[in-house]
Image (cartoon, rainbow, N blue to C red):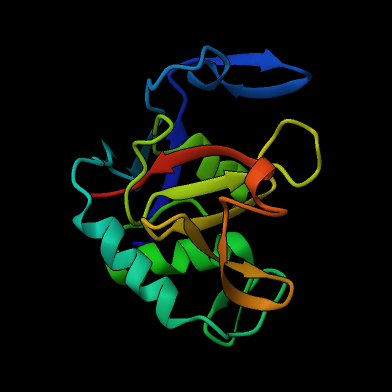
Length: 173
């Protein structure tokens, strides 16, 4: 039976016309925990160590140079959330949500300066105070992500990306 991930929202708040988890609105680290759902039972996914995240990062790094494909979820072509989803599925053996919006609703918020390898970095590229792009942090001030020019590794400490970071979440098992 095929399993899916569904986010069980602890609570939510309307912030700037965008529905966001209350944890984000209140600047806290209260997690919104995804659950694995099948026809018989619902069990929460646990995110407790970083080993899986580091393995997901390794998968993403091995895909540098792969092409961009809107809606892509494989080495034949990735979009941003498709690369993150693929990396966690292959490296961490963890099914995380597929879209930027649903990935943002899941995981555990990470405070500034506490980022680790494999943490998921969300970017606001539209100015709407909402995540619109995502990638994996490498632990050295860079992110690997599927851009429209393909899968790239780029700095988020200077240049264009520096002021676009919206939030960081942790997805590990």
